[in-house]
Length: 196
Length: 120
Image 1 (cartoon, each protein chain N blue to C red):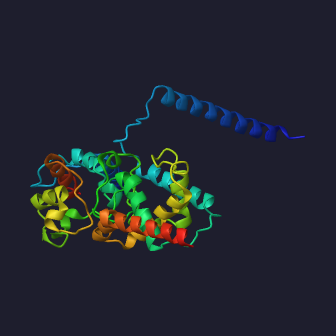
Image 2: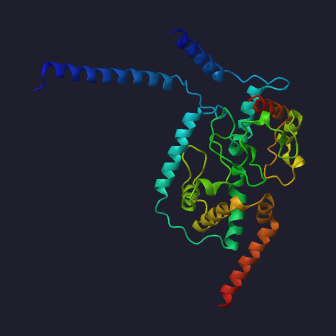
């Protein structure tokens, strides 16, 4: 049995915690219900909040992408395919070496980062996870149901190669010439398939 | 006691100054506070670390915290406000082949952005 003194301490602690919790809940409800939080995309986060969100995002992706096996990447045909996928779906928000994102990608919050430094921030398996699954509340869509798995790997291979690209490299790989080469290659592969 | 009070007041003043609005540096045209927002709406902070703005540790473009002290822009032209405005609006015109694209910044926005960067 607790002594009177111990009982008093326990009672005080419990009541204090309950009281503090109730007050916090009431303040939270007022802020929530009165709409005091400014949800505008052109109002920036406080640096500390931004850093906490960003670190949480990194830990989450590290954890969820842990078991992904990365196939051999970077064959020239795959890179060209990746370049085409990137030009069709990614450059609008992320931009590319020497290429600005379109206006809808410029004023988002959070800002879709450039991918010229993707190798610094992410492992290849993490790039695949992000592309396939997207990132909640960030504007990054999930591509799983919109791109084939081989196209996701192709664009991951392309993004992984982006840090070594100059603006001229990017232009060459995504312009008509690159696309033509890719089509020729595909046709060639198809013919070879028929021959065998 | 007096010493402690002076330190406290100085600390509070510093804190207030940090929270306050950016005033344009002497000889700088434009509205730095408007520039601070314009800068986020043209994705400057996607590639550059910008003083006074939340953002990632990104080193795709150079950090912009010491723009007022720089002598040259892209190692090409003297770092005057006029040149900085030109650079923000069309980097390729000053340094063809540079990886920084023109971001479609209007002259007014470029003046305000340069005012913010040069007033840090």
